[in-house]
Image 1 (cartoon, one colour):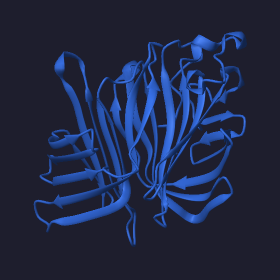
Image 2 (image 1 turned 180 degrees about the vertical axis):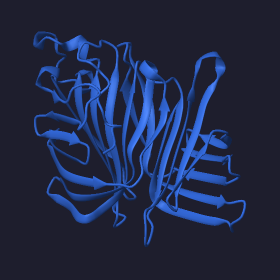
Image 3 (image 1 turned 135 degrees about the horizontal axis):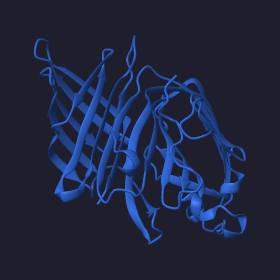
Length: 319
């Protein structure tokens, strides 16, 4: 069992975000779903009387997000806030992990939820399995980016206002777990999934963000043919936040070369405000969970391989 979902935050932390999320592209190509289970500054709301108003869900210490990215349509986001005293969560640094509040729950291999927001009703009950997990970034108390399920296969059911999505292989994607003292001022992140016909999927995850003294964290991890390849020398050719495009090249230690082109320029681009952990305003996050991706993989002793997905990637940019 992966331990990458284990809780880091304590209930006394006054400045901390921790989020468990999943991105699932539907197998039939109808769209994609993005779910977030968020714990935000729990120490500021230890006592029920100090909770923020439910009328502003993004100010609440516990939040559940559901975003629907319909193919060719405009995304819809639904957010509901909850008081921290109602949260049931496993102890810090212990497995198995479980997060539960109301009808919403996420654990090591499944999640479910039920939201009623602005006249809309969203319900989901999902299970997922995978063959690969990875820690993309780990800077201790400053923050981390973990991927307990990188090549996730999802099954179960989602219902939105009477429309149902159900299946044994309902979709493909990723389940991740991030935390930090604050959000980075700048980041670019992508995850792309290329389902295999007779074996595990190929996945690519890449992350770039700002660090002190003008430095940048750069890392990509490719899971291909049952092997992990780590790249730390990303060379960006294009980073277009306005149109959400990202192209880069990198080389692994064994000589494997990777060219990646992620294209999120479509009606599915979604721009949402995220609250800062210091309580001083918000910033915009651009996300397209229905992005396309093309990979060219060139091994030192093997022919080049080209992989493409029209809607199996997510691309996210800030600043």
